[in-house]
Image: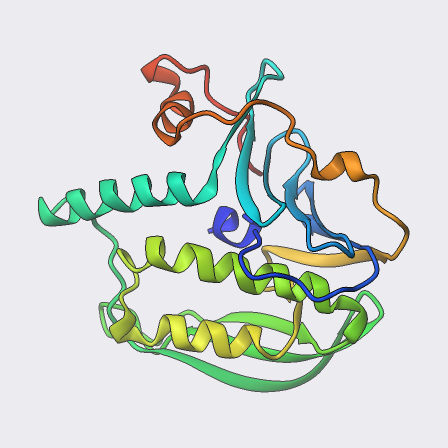
Length: 238
């Protein structure tokens, strides 16, 4: 779940803003979201994982324990993963499917990291066994300074939705409610997953948006993620 929220990339062109860097606490790690005034962006955990948008194209980055970085086009990786999940679903092997309606409930004002926002409860209305659904609290801010960061989160969810539909189908209303939530602004806090700590508007080094390694095919990228399939695995997320 953290990977879905932390993965966090950029699909639609960003309007022109000043450079913005937002740092969130993510367990013992720092989730860093960066956007420059030219439409490039980066989101991830340094030394472990990242999604980088450069010149209108999204790339996913993974850093192995050896320090070697693997890079692939995000769209190709997600297409391959979606095909694998669809195949497993047809075999009856995709478990944990959520089929209950999702709801979005306003909970009032909140302040996080010095920014005022609105708190929302978001989640399934009930669990598969009939129990009341476990809602997650989101605090969202409409502050224009954070708008480039919010745009990155919104694009991240949009690009991940086709993959997530295998587990949370559209019939639940998840996609519509998630978009409605993200339209309210930029996440300041997502339950206990991550929380905004600092925001800076200083110029970002252009090297942050350079590809750190050659681009490889999606299959090679995914195989490298499997320690038992010829790869050495990747540093785990917190």
